[in-house]
Amino acid sequence: MEEMLRKKVMLSGIKPSGDLTLGSYLGAVRHWAARAEEFDCYYFMADMHAITVRQDPAVLRRRTLEQLAQYIACGLNPEKNTLFIQSHVHQHAELGWVLNCYSMFGELSRMTQFKDKSAKNVDNINGGLFTYPSLMAADILLYQPDYVPVGEDQKQHVELTRNIVQRFNGIYGDVFKMPEPYIPKVGARIMSLTNPASKMSKSEDQDTGRVTLMDDPTLIMKQFKRAITDSDTQRCVRYDPEEKPGVANLMTIYAAVTGKSYQEIEAEFDGQGYGMFKPAVGEAVVEVLRPIRDEAQRILKDKAYLESVYRNGAEKASYAAERTLRKVYKKIGFISQ
Ligand code: TRP
Image 1 (cartoon, rainbow, N blue to C red):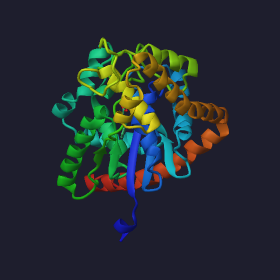
Image 2 (cartoon, rainbow, N blue to C red; image 1 turned 45 degrees about the horizontal axis):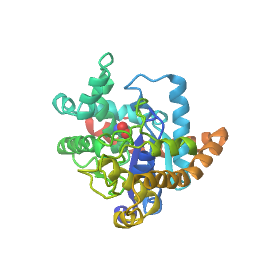
Image 3 (tube, helix red, strand yellow; image 1 turned 45 degrees about the vertical axis):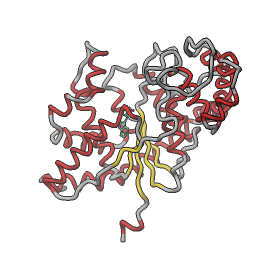
């Protein structure tokens, strides 16, 4: 009966290690906002994950609050979604430790994100970077979600979480619900405007091909005008991710913000070349981001409101998380107090 009445649960998080980008919005937060009625949703600022790479404390603080304001501005209503800051819910660290003991050295060593990040931070290959996926498994499993919306780059971590579930449940019975990764089709992967071979990254300050949610319209237009296309002499706007990855990325963005299909876009710019196309994409993006930026700036000034949102969120999250943690502690043989 409880199962029948229970709404399906969805959970995701983003590290406040960089400013949210157009890619974060189109690939993630926009889809989350559309799910609030159908699912019981938990979204958090993964500040504990952010410190696996050295952060400036003041910047981390600013970005965490900014990210919360942006979540709300992107349409995540705090009345309908549980929005919280990871470090406010102590059960994450606690279950994270337990799950460390059920994550194998070998499987953690195979994580591509660990390999990439250790190659980029050779002077700080810390234990947290290595056990990151166990903490992420804890983030997920505390809430017993059905779906975990993530980008392609996080799928391997969700797979590892599934292995942990199998291992743990195999020993102790049905403790954790098996989560499914959920990868949106449209706009799932927005690439850098200057390097269409790599994802538009929020963490890399060097990525000149990125548009953040707080960028002003002039900067956004500049970024789109100098977006990389290709050397096609016809300058033809055609969807071909293999041959024309830059143009395909711009078309993906344009399709995502206008709702038009690739065929419609090809017809719209037929014979017009890139000179017309690039600023048109820029303008469409400016119009979509304008209300988000205005609203986020307004919310950010209202510290009391932000505080009430993250306090309520932590309280709700903690209630759900505690239920799972108690069950786990009991199963593994800890004395209950
Ligand atoms: N690892 C994710 C990222 O880098 C953030 C994250 C942490 C997350 N815990 C999570 C995502 C749990 C989904 C579910 O963006």
